[in-house]
Amino acid sequence: MTRDEPEAKATAPDEEDEWQLYATAGYAAAEDPWDDLVPVEEEDSADEEWFDGDDFESNGQTVDWDSPPCPAPLGIAHMIRLGTCDHCLHRVGGRRTEERGAAGGAILRAEAHSRDRELSEFEAPDLCPLCENLFDDVENIVTRIVDQTGELDHGSLQVGVHVPKDLIAEEDRLRTRHAAPGSRPLKAAFSDAVQAGVATRMPVVTFVKERPDLMILIDCLTLRVDVDIRPVFIYGRYRKLDRGIPQTRWPCRACRGRAEGCESCEGTGLQYPDSVQDLIGEPFRLALSADDTSFHGMGREDIDVRCLGRGRPFVLEVKRPRIRRTDLEELMHAVNANAADKLEISDLRWTNRSEVSRVKETRAEKSYTIRFSVEELPEEATILEAISGLSGVTLEQQTPKRVSHRRADKKRKRKVVSIDNILVDGSEVQFSVRCEAGTYVKELVHSDEGRTAPSVASVLDSPCEVIWLDVEDIHAD
Ligand SMILES: [Zn+2]
Ligand SMILES: [Zn+2]
Image 1: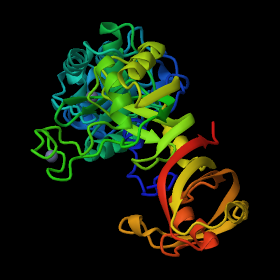
Image 2: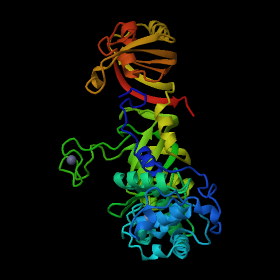
Image 3: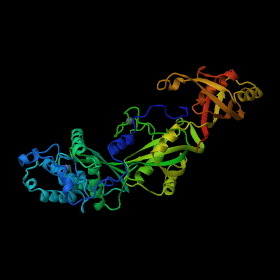
Image 4: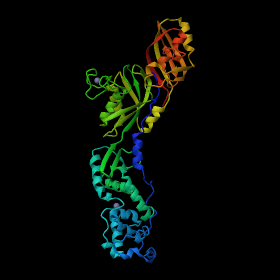
């Protein structure tokens, strides 16, 4: 493929985006949920006006569904009757207490009991209707998180909580009706409690709402904790000095790249032993103790095409790295020493996922040198004039035969920006050409049976055969 443009195929919805949705769904933003709560007041006669009688007094076991919302004492009493746990009582009670969390709820409960003796005799349900006793599992979950992340190199964590939908709906209904205005919703409150627990056990971590080092997903139904080690990204440029190296890892055609390989790939599972991806990626994978890499180039060149000049921009994605930082200069030298005469990298820096799409979507002009043989050679002056005449023209290129099995058959217009350095050497000719992104350069020479017009073959009125092609520059970054 000489087609030098970003991969056209649509990418699946980004894994990271899904996580982000998961993680932040239902979160109140950064506002302080305690801002608008009323301070604890001594019980006074004003509270009595909430009391509307009947139902409440008739029998100690009756729940008054018309009670006012918290922070009214009757609202708090109502939540206690419903079986609200200490943690949720504090969360929805709307009162400031000396302690927070369950301890704060216990204070509110004790106050309510001292106001109303019958309340202490009331047999409330065991299961908290607001959280189904989820807060009892906080310590357990914190321990799982600490156990699963202890060995990893990380600074920032993002917590995502999955709570069953019906619990969310029921909690929302009760909270809307009975809780103090501004009460923290279950999911956010639970996430806060887990983060507070983790923070006491792992004081160096920070919690973030985007681009974490580690994504922690908690399933509240099964109490399962999944730790997703987020990838790291490195930007750089590569020069491919040798022909016969594909840009990305290419699985063996015979065995489809299975791990143990086959006879035809000598057990490697690879069609070509080297790839730009692995020549760069493997030293990174080892240094960062990672699982795998993905390679994102600003376009790609054919296997048999070198890439020279300043090289081609790329972003290397290193997946599930146990180590997140290393000396890039040192690794660059290691890659270059290991890949001597095949490949060279430069301009390394740390980056993030957003640069992957930037690099893939950039449509840069490219400069090439191409050498080819001419079957029926005209006079040198004629050759020079005919080829120079293609400088500045707009080509019409129908999808080349060689790629038509995987690309739509379309006609595209591509501009030849300039042509120079035309050299005639016996029956071989060579020139430099700068053209628009997405130009099929080999086809510009041999015409692909007339699918590219005009072409060198058409202006020389002779079949031409490409000998080699080099990318000389990618005019970007
Ligand atoms: Zn609860
Ligand atoms: Zn094989």
